Length: 200
Image 1: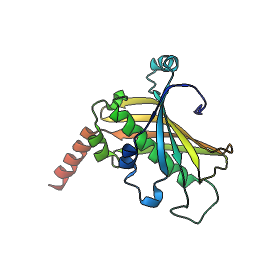
Image 2: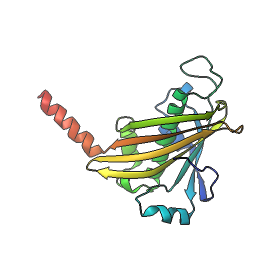
Image 3: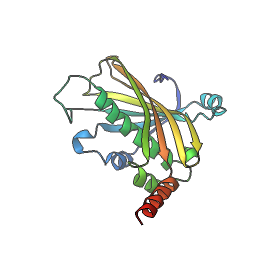
Image 4: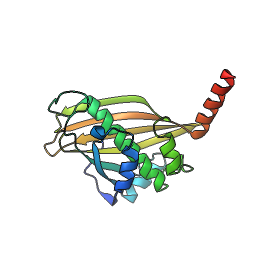
């Protein structure tokens, strides 16, 4: 799915730097590529058209990124696949934090920020990842946009279909489609109880 980054939005809300810092905190200092972000709410007409198909595309999370130097390799001179993955993860973690904080995501309506923070790293799993690089991106200064465009639930599992794009002022462009499996706190508890039973 190609994200339309030029569409109109009904409202744009700057994400607090405190929220950014809290949910980018797991990364080492030289891997904190996401600098600031904003949530872009879709126009009501667009939202109503999508609601019948359980489409959770409430809006987009857009962020500013900068990678002064790679954290794992000598400078390649452009945005690469490893950096794509890292930036996607940071953008995704922040989007979930914003949705949970503002009670915008029905599938996680019973989550709060404390619960999400506790399970942020352990319960969010990439089940499918594909990316395409259309034109080289200047990694010193670029932006990214993420959309959760569909979700489904089954027992203690939430499946998310997401799309993202990264781009710069010189028409650099990369895009991807990523599926995420979210284990609910209940499923984690059941797994731990099973492990304890096996050990005992």
